Image (tube, rainbow, N blue to C red; front, side, top):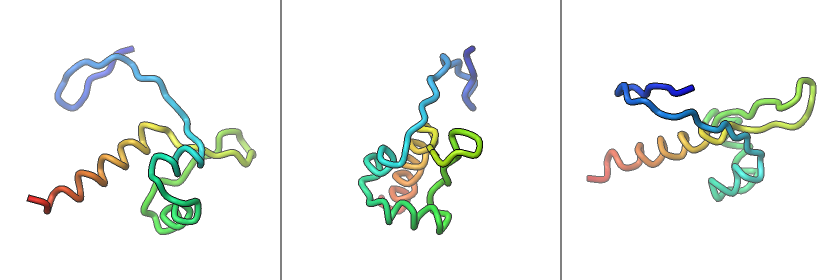
Length: 80
């Protein structure tokens, strides 16, 4: 099913990808300790449990990518 973005443009459906801790660290180029610290401070989205009552957690890759792009855009605001 296609969806519309805020401008009204139609886009094809996207594949939802779940990524685990190691992949998030790789994308951000940070240590586990830094990732846990950022989550605890509310500076990065919390992961969600993949299986009810399970221990495995993950993030939606598009949400991590959006966080990265938002960070990039927020640092460019004052860089004129």
